[in-house]
Image (cartoon, rainbow, N blue to C red):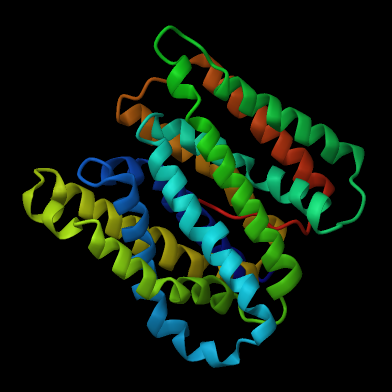
Length: 301
């Protein structure tokens, strides 16, 4: 990496860590006025609006056989996780969502093995998977008299990270190398532009915007989450891939839970020593997985 590229890469790395790590608190603030369905649909719609002028002209280059792959990425990599995160955060802290989001590379590895017939797994990665899931279990099964029921909602985040893992493997095996990175990021959103616009209209979001006392806070959170957190951040992520390498770029996942915890503490969320211990286990597991697989792709929330 050249010196100027190294500086650019580190700038983007830090920016992405801050932006993606802030996604969970932004989802929480979006939920002040909007329902989980409205948050998910608005997030998809706003991002689709941003991507459409950039990649719409590339739609003609899509081969018929790849329509299914792009559709899977649209649903598993974008729409469904957006809904699951929003629904889960009506019951769990945003910082906890940020902690569990770190499971994404673990599911990327496992789904690659189970369904995409990737190569055999080194013992280091097997240990990493076990340690990572131990950390996740500590969060999911964390029990106090008040939180045992709420902690079960964290399973929705686990499901979302599994969907990210599926999407990442589809990109890796079906689309990567045949389409430009910006096309892979943007075309699935173009697919969802009209459906998300229609569905969002049907939720009555305009009425919420004009009547809810927290509408201003929530709409700004949604705009930031969609335009900066998804559209701009995705574009910069692929730029970082061009000027660095996949290992460096994917390592941004280590920074996300730290930023998420920072915002959670700032917002007076309840975090115990168990959450920090769980984070240690998950991060350790992810580290072992990355160490054994330099080329494995992982995706953000």
